[in-house]
Length: 271
Length: 303
Image 1 (cartoon, chains in turn orange, brown):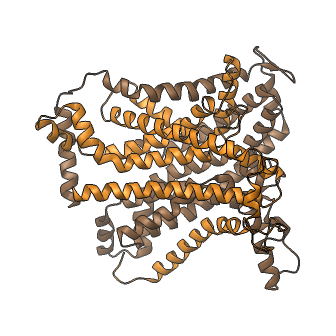
Image 2: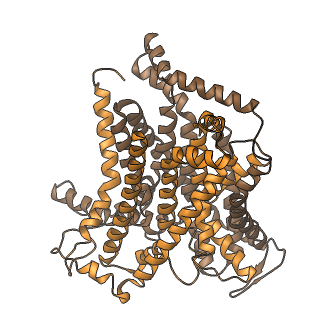
Image 3: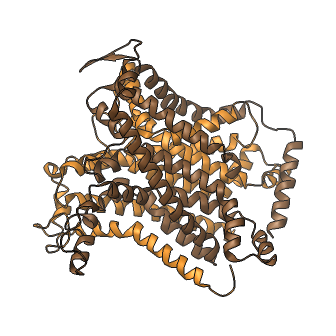
């Protein structure tokens, strides 16, 4: 706030550093412990260093169906991501104008964030049961995940369009562009970084979601459900190994999304 | 720069109102159709179904369509339910107080003390990344830290501060609240940061010119203007804590209960109508809390 760094700055900077340590410290503990030696336990000290527990992941008797649940979660997250981006973008476009039912729909989207996830899980489970459909990860769980990712997507699109001046589109139209040309050549490139953000949210929120999936996944577990089951019955560092791998995967996804955003911004700056 | 930009946006908005709509009236409805359908099918309909089922009868294997209030009588008439609600509310109040305190100072530091925009973006991302990783992993990562032979206990024993490990670090209310703060603080940091970034810096300069101290500026200018962000963050944190079953189950080691955990146990016993009655009561409580908070803030204005 002032030119010279005050005592307040150092106190707050220290507090912020503590907060970051609080966020990442425990995570680093399980990453280190996942390299525990074959005879090591769930806590420090490290009893040698090995990749034993990572190898253990691929034996089904140790952790259940890790490969299958990862594949299901990955495909599900991709589906959720695509639907979230398209549906949120369309809704964001619609909400730029007044229309009947806009306010109730907005509050419905907010309600989707607020309603306890386990209630959605129960409701979808019972609904499918009563309609005679079998819940599966690609139908009922997909819907359950969308109730969690869509509100975030819609709220992000709202924030984007609230700050988006329509004069760019008007200029394009004055130059003779059609509605579709205005959308694809003017609007879409301008909001592309935000759309990537929405995609990142859609993917990661779905990939890690389990409270809404609980009753909606059907016979085959998603990865977070598998992990959740493991917390109660696995007492070896194989749990940490799985945690390390899924966390590394999440970091990878985040890094890719950020790299794409930076790339898009650079290209736009050059153009 | 900002002034001209704001001016042009305002002018554009005024122009938009004058300009006749080019697209036919039906377009917004077509655009929102997918959202309406998805939320209708997977949010509204399941909630209606839950309400309906909460009046049904059941035995160990089946549910029977009926209209009985027994599930509610059993839920509301049970001492356990009230105790569980009290316990859940206790978590909500504790976690909310701590996350609001921590979240405000983190957001305040980011918004007002970090000078370069690049550093600000990077530090903001540092805070956001954990939110995009698995909650379960973040939860169990406390086990090697807090456990009987965990890092904290070993460090304290080595330093000679204690002679025997502290037992209440893990599998206790302390662990539950700590893990919830760990999981949910971000939900309050982001909305507060968002409102702080939108405070007109000239207001702060004006206060300083009028002779206000840093503390007075914080208390009389910044905090009142940050209230909408605090309210939105509060909605997130309170509803997340009220809905939580996994943190309570894992971090208390099964020794504490929350309303959602009680529901989950009923669901695993196939007592869906009982769980549905519980769900209805919980939904009512949560919506009342949210409605209370919404009286303070208009969310649409804050986006």
